[in-house]
Amino acid sequence: MTKSSLQILETLLRDRSGTLYIALSGGIDSITLMTVAARVRTAPTIAVHAVSEAVPAEATDRCRKLASERNWTLQILNAGEFNDQRYIDNPVNRCYYCKTNLFARITDHIDTTSATIATGTNQDDLGDYRPGLIAASENSVWQPFAEAGIDKNTIRKIARAENLGELSALPAQPCLSSRVETGIAINGADLLFVHRVERRLASEIGEGDIRCRITADGVVAQLPADTSAFSDQKQHAKLEALLTELCASHQRRFDRIEPYRMGSAFLRTAND
Image (cartoon, rainbow, N blue to C red):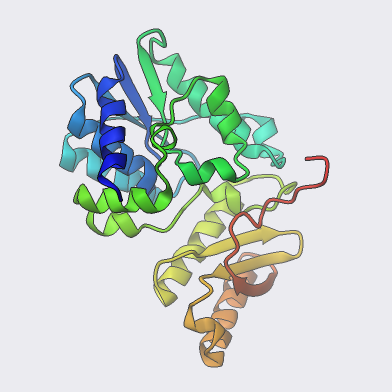
């Protein structure tokens, strides 16, 4: 981290007038943004965390704990995306409908003439397929990290400098709906199953880029490419047996274990 990147971020946050509402997901990006904003701003800074079936309980617990420890003002709301059939249908731009609902709910509770909504979107996100960024643009949502030219690696360095400790190493954890293959309708039972499997796998191999994917071919478990399960046949067989049993107990078919691939649940066509 260059000293100037943090200084630029601090200046941007300090100079933003009015109340700042930060969408706090429970991931390291938004946590770091809220931490720096709360430290440097004198104007009101409020964390807003959305709960739903797609948000792991530990993310909500993390937000509550940090708010209590650091004396943040925290508002918790339900973004209502599960009331939107366009979201439930799980098109390739599902995230657009999720973020549209989130920003609309926040906007309902603020005076947009004197307040700003901000997210932890960083420079790296701008080069990825992120339909939610369209919703952010349509709702005039501010992205301080991106404006300051700060990428994910720099965010982790800032997090360590802000004494966020082991949170600085949190693996990326997008919402649970991101595990469901495009075109397969989103439902609470699938998301509960996904979360249960991922927590069980984490207890077996440790935290990391672990995904339980719901696909047309069955349940696919993705593990960090460097995990010993890909070099130790006994461990691989043990995990396969565990996953087969878990799937069978929920009337699901286990398909395979493979290395983690970011965004692999998204199925896009040439027309998307």
